[in-house]
Amino acid sequence: MLTIRSAEPADAQAIGAVFDAAVREGWKYLGELAARPMFPPEEWDAEVAKHAPPNAMLVAIDDTSRVIGFAAVHPAEGEMFLLFVHPDHAGLGVGRALLEAAHEVLRSAGCREAFLYTHEQNKRAIAVYEAAGYRRDGTVRESEFRGVHQREPRLVKKLT
Image (cartoon, rainbow, N blue to C red; front, side, top):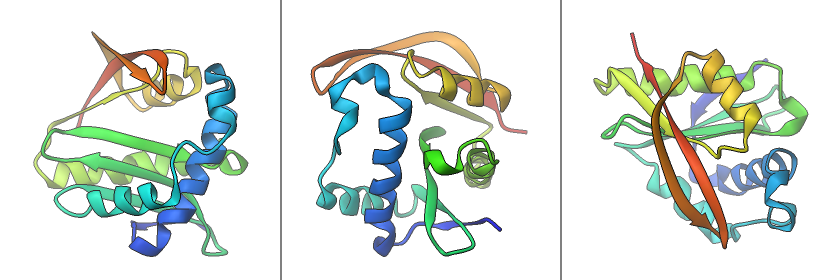
């Protein structure tokens, strides 16, 4: 059984643990950077607080009341900002459920389109988003993440 609900301040550290596990598994292309936690606990507290309305952070809770995934959106921009699922729960529909719930938040805010950026090397994420109807629009954001150069294609999806 899976429940999707708004994140609460008490979820912050569990959200951080999901992020760390997902990054260790999915971002191996970042080498040693992915092998250790990227953010201290207080940054997860701040991230959850930052996603209070009008933004939104959603968590996926399993039948043991554990956080197993999370998503964040910025409705003012139409941005799908974060989506991570614990690797132990990957491929079970958790990401799809979070993505649909996030899309509903965006639709409810009047967004007709969603966009996101993801690391070019993150082939699994790109495949998940493309399967959900996202398409590259040709825009690529280049940035430095902890000293590693990143190329991030922009993907967009019509919200109907």
